[in-house]
Amino acid sequence: MDISDVSDTAKSANATLVKPVSNAIRILRHLSLVGKPERSVDIARQLSINPSTCFNILRTLVQEDVVDFSPLSKRYSVGSGLARLVEQLVTQGHRVQMAKPLLQNLASRLRVTITLWRKMSPDRIVIVSSAASPTDVRIDMAEGQRLPVLMGASGRLFATQIDLHDPMVESSFEKIRWARPLSLEDYREDVKVAAERGWAMDDGHFSGGILAVAAPIYSPANSIEFTVSAVMFRGQRDEEGLAEMGKALIEFCNEVACVLY
Image 1 (spheres, rainbow, N blue to C red):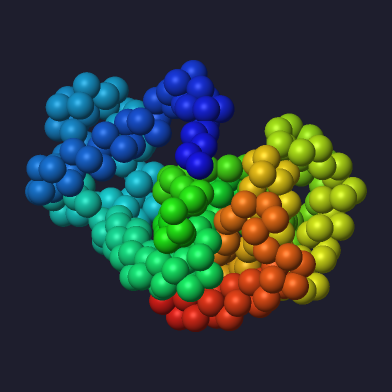
Image 2: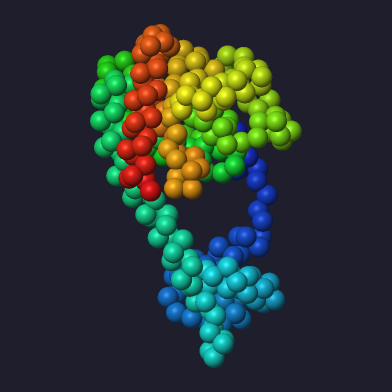
């Protein structure tokens, strides 16, 4: 099953360009490519940016530690903060890659599709790694697939750290298109149960005929940034089997946390 996020694509196509942000990225890209310090006026001229605007953007980037400024030469260069940011992203991506064999082993052992979800923003989650079931008839979950943060079994886990009585959260919930009707009251009860037993389940609400069980991966700060989900067809496991799978996922998440953090 490969579900594309059409709404996000449409939003991106109709998005308004924020010029200062665009110019800041262009400046960072330029400084990275030239590989040497440059004056503000030279950067502005080469990028066709208003000199005053360019200067103000550079000052902001210096304050954010992604650009360095030399008072002696009056020149700007890529800052150490940008290098640290890139290093963190590369390191996180490498750790996700290291977790892939573990996901594949679990998928083979449980004979279901296993996905690793990450919270990418306050309102979105994304599949960063996926291992398909080794069975002939299986469910494929595409890496890069994005969903509203409240959706699915993983969404119920992220929701344990969200105020579900917040009017904005309630509004976001009402906009979700479920395959099977789900009231906010029932959803809150699902989240409560998930918090108590340590794993969550979505029984056909995310996608018709599909059942998912998920467990959280806690960060050192005890926040949920990742979840692991087992995806299968409805009726593939009985109630006892689902409970066993939930416990297996909890144990697995404790193991994979050592790789991701």
